Image (cartoon, rainbow, N blue to C red; front, side, top):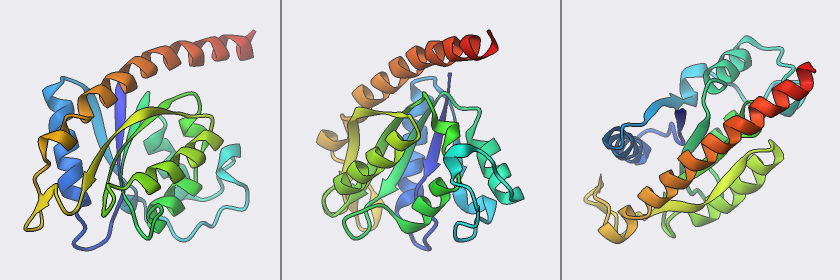
Length: 190
C-alpha cells in the first residue's frame, strides 16, 4: 500500500514544506510507504486541457506526466493551506487537470490556516467526491497562531494527536478500496 502525499503550496516562503516534512516523519515512524508529490515539478500552466480531467483523455505532455505521477498510489494525503476561506488556487488548478487517478481511492487531509484550514478541507471534499474518491472524516488540522512558533512548525499535542486516527482510517480504507478496484477490474475484463 502506497500513499501519495500531495504538497499543497508552491508559494515562496510557504509554511507547506514544514508541514509536509512533519507528515513525512509521521508516516516514516509508522513504517508506511509514501512519496511526496510537488505539482510545481510538472510545469502545469493554467488549465489547458480541452476535455475535463475526469475523462482521462489527456492531450498535453505535462498533464500526462502529472497523471502518471499520481496514478500508482492507493491513497493520498493532501497537505493544504487555506487561502481566503478556500483552497489554494495553484493546487486546485493542478487537481483540475486530472481526476480518474483518484477514483475508488481514499483521500485524507492535513490542513493549516488561521482557522486550521477546515474550510479548505470542506471545499476539497466536494472536489474529490466528483472523482469518485472517498475522503476520510478525520483530519489533522493546525492553526498558524498556535501550531507555528516564530515561523516554524511546532504543533501542539492537541493538534498533532489527530494525525494517528486519521492515518489509521486512511490505511484501512486503502485496503478496502484495493478490493473494490480489483472487483471493478474483473467486471470490466469479464
